[in-house]
Image (cartoon, rainbow, N blue to C red):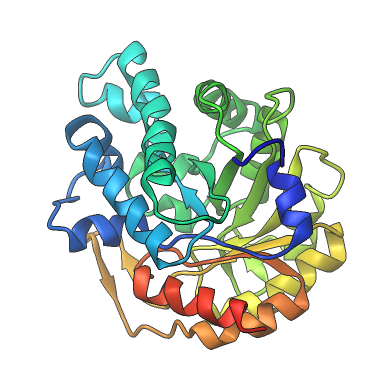
Length: 303
């Protein structure tokens, strides 16, 4: 955060560059993420590594760091024997690590911290975030998300990133849970074409956030780059809000093998079209690293 400028004000003033994938940056630095907690494990074991990953993206031109809390949940840490008090400390640490990176970054532009709130499926660590339809009610999903969101909000991020949401029902739960926290949020779905991963039309899915004052942007992430353009247009038309987009590399995640498969299709040149259609938060997700974020920053800065 800078001075008294809010994240919403900064978003209204222009386009912000998001960072790229946390996991691929940590792996590039030699860290093993081969367990159910994924990058969240390093919050407990190597928090400095998380700060360094954020620093790499700020140096590449990112304006916004998304915290390593995507897969950090009370339930997930409990399976590793970590109690609720310590888990709350680690959630708060995810925000502090990004803040520390912003403090150390040798840049003069404002830098922002988005606290990641991953979907229920991320906690399951079986690829469910690419399917949705968990068999839980909206009330049950709200009870899962709210305690973690309260802790993250208390750590004073600039915005909550309600991200990689595969199902409009889960979005409804998240939108209930964000009310009253005092922190703005963006809502981004993972999609397949013009539908959520659970199969709902994007018009319906984005519409759930249209009248939620806490939501300052809507859009998509962790999807194929080819699916972004249509989603931007739908999100802008249905909600009238700024649009957030950060697709993955174009490769697909094999949950059984815990590996990425296929060919990378990410092209930073596409961001011109995304911005023209209404995107105001633009970056990358899984397998999109600092090199690609630097290209996005240069492309957007050249317009």
